[in-house]
Figure (cartoon, helix red, strand yellow):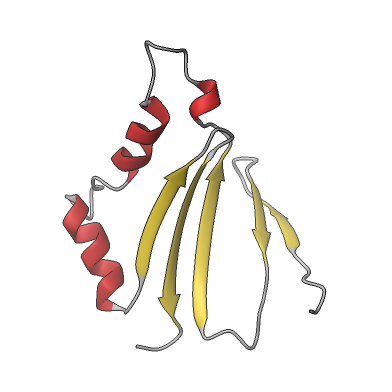
Length: 100
């Protein structure tokens, strides 16, 4: 297996952005790791909060006003999105083929 190299970029908000170019790949993927998971919840009062927030992210935006439109937009290009929550964090990701 080849060594994979990442380029670390600085964003205006200070959030680190890591980019990896894979010329042989036929998809584009993006992921966001939020370093907040179930271990950050105060039990029992906040039990399930991290997972609930994960689902809220996909509930819509000003442009995509409900959860079905968010997914449908990616599906129109043959892509998909998903997320999962662990004790350590919450990870959001999507993947879209290079060409439909």
